[in-house]
Length: 111
Length: 113
Image (cartoon, each protein chain N blue to C red):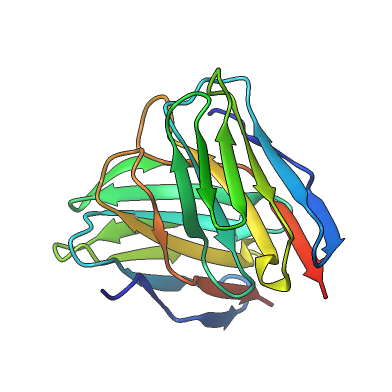
């Protein structure tokens, strides 16, 4: 099983601040997905990155896939309370069919 | 397009009982995966079914089992419940390949007393 390490584990910031969360591994991935899970709900896919060095933007969220395809980051600009949730990264296995998930970064944005 | 539906949303059981959880995938999705989510361990993979066949299984005891029906709906069963089985059980459906995005339901919150 490929291990995905996410950091930080917890993050509490005020509205308007910027932040970056990380997803790292010693394995090379063919692709990597980012999900957000809000309290009481299931995870929802935000983005899939496929190419090493790829940068994708989703409004105030910027996702980057490392050149070596072993790591990824999520940067949020001017965080809002609606960004509160658990951010999970996930990668397909080298064999088999089950996605491997990191343990997530729990983000709290206060007004 | 209807999303993934899990029933029931909440369940309270006592130790030693058994429980069955249900998942209806998005129409056209043939792969259904089950995950256990706890604060300490995060999302842990239980098993995945495709066209009624279990293709992959996580590292859980045999008390955890599942099945998939011809309409792609899936159930998971946990027998002889233990306190440590208290968790959020999430079901996800996808088109089938391992790198396909997972579409999650909102989960079943199982509490063991």
